[in-house]
Amino acid sequence: MIRLLKTRPRTVATLLLWQRQYTVSAAERLGSYASEDMTNVDHLVIGGGVVGLAIGRQLAARQGSTLVVEKNRGFGMETSSRNSEVIHAGIYYPKTSLRTRLCIEGKHMLYTYCQEHSVPFKRIGKWVVAQNDEQAEYLRQLAVHCADVDVPVHMVSQKQAKHDEPFVQAHAVLASPTTGIIDSHGLMTTLHQDLTERGADLALGTEVQAIHRDNTGGYRVLLATGDSDMPHMAVRAATVVNAAGLWADRIACMLVPDDHEWHSKYKLHFAKGRYYLHTNSSDSPSIRVQRLVYPVPDKQITSLGTHLTLDMGGAIRFGPDLEWVSSNTDYATDGGEPIKNVAAAIAEYLPMIQANDLAPGYTGIRPKLQLPGGVFRDFVIKEESDAGFPGFVNLVGIESPGLTSSLAMAQMVDRLLH
Image (tube, rainbow, N blue to C red; front, side, top):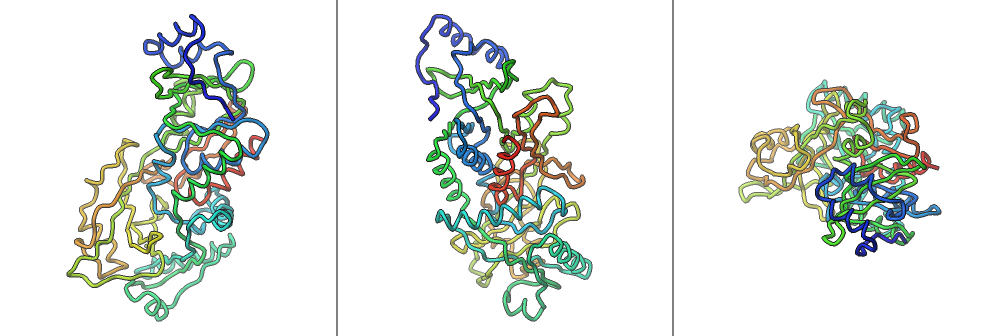
C-alpha cells in the first residue's frame, strides 16, 4: 500500500516550504520539493469516476504501486453518476471509431463483470423509434451498420410493436436486444473494492494542481490534499493516466506551454442535460413500458435525444435534453427548454405524456470534443510519447458510451503503458 504523507514537518527546510505554500504558484511549489519529500508511485490515475476506477483496478493487477486521486469527497460524483445508467449496445458510431469498438468490447466485459460480482443490472433491450419515412430509412441503414459491426438488432413490425408496447407510438422500430441498464453506483463501489483488494489506493478530496516532466524520468505531480496540517503533497509517478473527465483538458494542458496544440486539440465543450422524472399525474392514465425507448438521434450524433429509460426499480425517467454551457459545474435543474417543450418532444413517441407528468430530476454534463453543431469527434485515448511525454496517457472527450466502455478502456490503457 502507498503511504500518503500525513505527518508533520520533520525539518526546518520542509517547514519553511509548507509555510510558503499559500504565497507561491503551484508550479513553483512543485519545483521546490526535494526528492526525499516526495511519494513515489508506479501508476498515478487522475480521476475517480467509473473510467478512472476501472483503470486503477486494471493497473493494480500489475507489479508496483497504483494511486487513484479524485478531487471530490466521493468517487464518481460527476459524469459517472449523472447519466442514464444504460449499458449501450454500440449501434450508432462509425465502424472504425474507438467509441464503437470499446463500447462493443466493454458491453460484453461489463455484463460478465456484473454477473461475477453481483452488480445489479438488467438486459431489458431498447427500441429506436422513427416517426416518418425519412427516419424509418435511417433505421434501415442503422440495421445494415449494426450487421457490419456484429451487433444484433432487428426491425419490429407495427403490429408487433403495438402489441409489445401499447403506449409507444412509432412509424418504424429498430430493436436492440443487448442494451441494458445498470446500477452505476453499485458498479463503482465494486470497482473501488476490487482496486483496494489488489493493493491500490484511492485518495479522495485530492486535487492535482501542477504536473512536470521529471528530468530523471516519470512525472512530478503536486496534489492539494484538503488536510489543514499538510495542505499539499508531491508525488513522483513513473506513469500518469489522465482520466479526469470534465477536467481532462485542463489536466493535459498542465504539462505544456500556453501555445501548445493541446490547448485547442483537447479543448472540451460542455453539454448539459436535464433528466425528468415521470410523476404519473392523477389526470393521466398510468403509462407502462418494458424497455428503453429512444427517438432517432440528430445527424451528427451530438445527442441521442430525450429518451425514455427505466431505473433498476422500474421507474420511468426521461432525458437528457441538450444545452451547451460554459461551466462544467453548473448542475442547476432550472433553465433550459420549457417543460411543455420537453413533454412535446417525448409525446412524439409517447403520446399520452403531458407536461404535468414530468418533474425535474437531476442534470449531468457531458465533456465533448465536438463543437456545438460540429462533426463527430471520437474518444481520445493516447499515450503521448510522440509529444515528448512517454508514460503519460490522456483520455479526453470521454462521454457516452464511457460507462459501458470503462472496462475495455482500462484494458486499452494497460496495453498502451505495458
